[in-house]
View 1: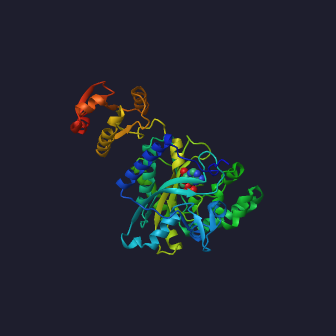
View 2: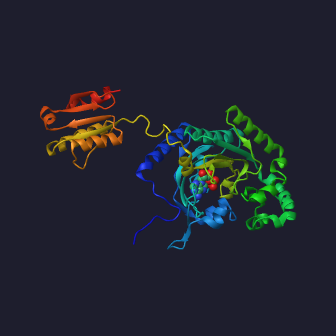
View 3: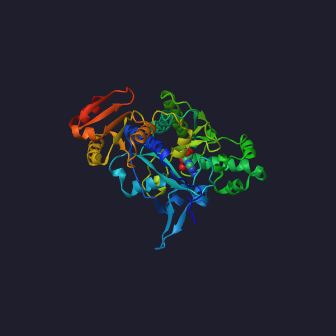
Length: 418
Ligand code: AMP
């Protein structure tokens, strides 16, 4: 029997793993520079955390979670999203006592049993940030600008930022009834899933991708018309800061996002380079989540972005990949040189260089071909003659210059090369 990977999962093979690594290290750098610290939470949590945090009637919780009862009878779930888990950790570890604002970011794998297609998998990777503690619009604008800037700096073109405000809980409560009153007379035109949501969570109907429902919703009252004064002031300031930051955006009054815990600002960033699954990133403000998971009322805002879609939308030629790495290929000829070669190679590697050798003991011709294939810019040759003279030949493949360097001055010589 041949084993195969599970449907909706994939292997990151060596030809692309470097790209993943470079994107991840860029994200770590960018977020650390912005004053965010990494948080890592377990890959599984109590199922109830997501039921409470995400909402029982959301697609994620009602249809897509990988849940099971373990041998001790505990109901567990592989994390389908990060925010609830980060907030659980924030409360459990009293992070509020360390600082009034917790600026956290994460990179990790999530699991949802969705229908797999291009850009949609059952195990996928996200990075995201959660700023827990500030209710002010400049925090919303910072979060949005970080997401936008990271995606643009990764070389993803054709990105659009869609922005909306869904108001505070009170606004939503009021609007909810207004939306139900509008949809009820049009009940027959709704899809089965929207019919089911009409009483439990009508705002989610605004997320529909169903063409005829979208048409119907064009005539629906918009949530932005029902924002309270405070909601409106907040939303205007977010927009003003984004203008100050030169971040372009489009107002999209139907953007309510799939998850239940959002309040006020909601946003998503899409790329026209992707197909049906065009959302690279989604986020917003979630002022009620900390309290609903058992903490003190704490306003918060964050986003999550999907790696697979970022990699799909990224330009292959992006210079982030393998920037300025000088590769060295060590050619050892003859068995007598092997132990010296291994020793020198270790020293060069410890000095911070990228260096490889041929573990297949091939001919010099094949080794040179391998060096070429690898894109090496320098070869170091050690044969019997060099052993006798206690030196190596160092060839700079870009200039064609070749010089010999005594064993004890190899690293200074490499440093002297541009
Ligand atoms: P969400 O947590 O649903 O708000 O999603 C945030 C981002 O994660 C989306 O914009 C996508 O880029 C990515 N994402 C969500 N679900 C999947 C999936 N099943 N496969 C790949 N990426 C996903």
